[in-house]
Length: 89
Image (cartoon, rainbow, N blue to C red; front, side, top):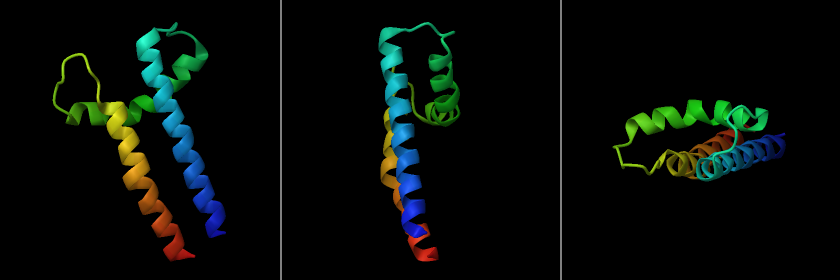
C-alpha cells in the first residue's frame, strides 16, 4: 500500500514538473492561447505559480516562479509526503 501511494506521489510530481516545463516553453514560443492544451496547462499551473510570483521580488522580464515551484515540489513537498506515507504504513 505504501509503495503504491509513493509511486502515485512521484507520478503526480513528474506530471506537474512536465506541465511547468510546458508552461516555460509556451512562454518562449507563444502558442495560440485558445488552444485547449495550452489553456489546460495554464489552468493547472497558474494556481500554483501565481502565489509564488506574488511572493517573489520583481526581476524584470524574467519569471522565476516556475523554477521555485519545481524546486518546492521536487525537494520539499514530495520528500515530506513520502516520509509521511512511510510513517503511516
